[in-house]
Image (cartoon, rainbow, N blue to C red; front, side, top):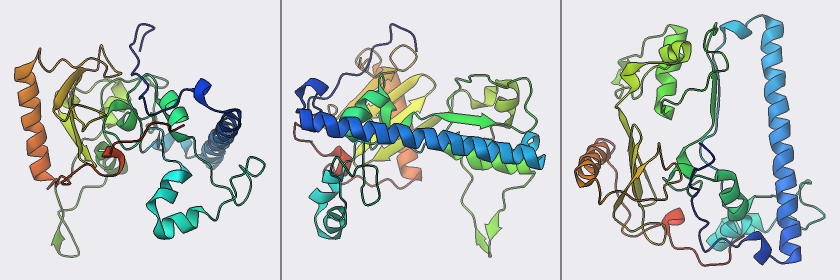
Length: 294
């Protein structure tokens, strides 16, 4: 992403920093301090693990994968309180006073404001099928990796590629059955060739689909088709060129009706294969959000 990359706009229901009270700013600053400390500890822990593999003499022959399962989360403890029932009772058991945050008995979150900042320039965050929710960091060290060590690879890969990669690295064939029952077809492609050479033409041109809480998406190469309910989208398919617009700021569906139709048909095939059932109305993250979240 270059200096001219257009960033996704902050949603109106997310309060800007200057709109927070001094008390709210103090709480959110503390939340980010705790979050930064957790990231630092995680980094240190991963380093200890890799050093242990080196001490054992197996590091060079190890396939290591580090990735996030989704974009930054806006979910706050107040969201659990709103659920009521056991979830609310559980959430009320924490002491999230400013003095106790980060200590035993507390449960902190970064909230929508920091989630938006963390995902920038991408659009939205965890729970949404926009790039801020599904484009995540991935660092992979292949066994005996040499030529591509430290290389940034831009070919889109997906979580479904991990199992084929691990199987090939281990020299294990995917079984046709388990305990006498046939196994489903294995999704994804092995990434070993891509990791070893930085190129694999067989990974070009394939697509991937998503659905969550009444929101849908299909990506193929640089094109991304998204369907979000208001206020997050129009309720219709919108098309984005991720090469030039990773923040999904400019809908070009009207300029590319044929492509939009073809990609939407690919999503319909994906939905049929995976037995996607839409809720009658948006739920969870897909529901409208009242202004004033921070």
